Every structure is written in structure tokens, then in C-alpha cells.
Image 1: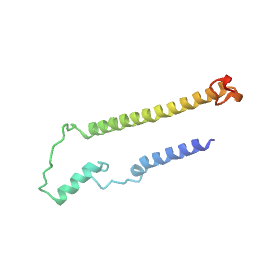
Image 2: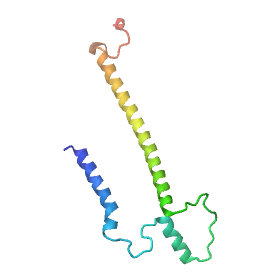
Image 3: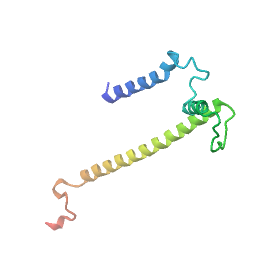
Length: 122
């Protein structure tokens, strides 16, 4: 097995463990909503510290349920990942294309005339 394949499998295993271990170990069982996220935790902390706090603005759109909010967040993450993957793939493809073009150019030029523009210049 190639070294890159081993590294990729190890990283995939680590990501899977990070996703499954909190659920398997019961982390967050003592909370009403165990995996609400940073926004919910911040709102709770602010309300405890300053009960009269008034937000500066309200959201443009408030999803009707937490599931829809999670789905929209996942969609946003997927679109962002797709844009990044397209960008990196495009630049990698361009670089590989340039390398192939240079290799073809080197193969098409005879070895004795490399660097010369016209054979008559001798």
C-alpha cells in the first residue's frame, strides 16, 4: 500500500473517531441539548451573565426548527468545500498541463539545437 493511501486512511479513521466518540462516550448527556454549537452556548452564557441584554440586531431569516438550521449550515459548508475543491483542482490541472506542455516541447526539440531559434545561426 502506498504511503499516501496509508495517511489518507489514517486521517479518515481519525475524523470518524472524532465524530463517533462523543456520541459513544455520552458526552453532553447532562445537557438539555447536548450538541447545540457555539452560538447556542454563547447565548446561554450571555443570558446568565447579563439577563437584561438586548441584541443589537435580529437575524434576517430565522429557520422554523433546529433541523432546518442544521441542514442550511451543512449546505453552506458543502458549497464552500465545493468551491475550494474546484479552485485547487483547477490550479493543479493548469500546473500539470503546463508541465506536460514543457515536456512535449523538450521532446520535440532535437538535443543538438536546444536553445537555438534557427539552425542557420551556427
